[in-house]
Length: 172
Image (cartoon, one colour):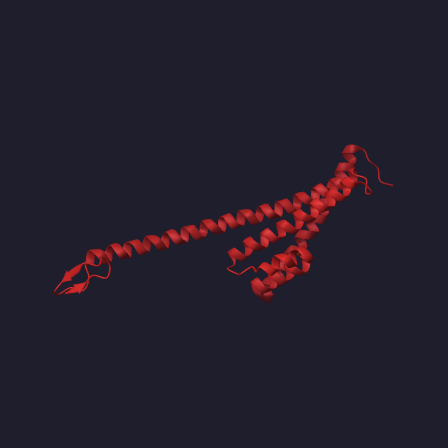
């Protein structure tokens, strides 16, 4: 007598499997595949949401530094604190963005890359983009990142100008 591989019970003399067990198994596997695809899409949406949040936090840190540039005396302790907060937000948000991007692109993000981000942010970002996406897509992503940094610098300048006009501060 044969044993059904799906349920583990005896199948009788002439059968190798219970067809009902096989159908339940195939239905379950189909459901698991569908659930896995839905879960993967949900994870990618969550990662994309976190990546967008990281970019927004970088942009807001540029605005904060632009406002601090106009309102705080450069020789004061407050200016030093503002610069350090900006640096921490910039490095942390960029590292979080790369961690989430590595999950989306199925590329392992090593523990040494985080250390490299703290030491040399632009070089680490370039290395990550080329290694994770290849030369062509990495170059395109690096150009996009440079454009994003340029737009952040414009945002920094605009926030400084708007703040100086609102507060009536004139630079000499």
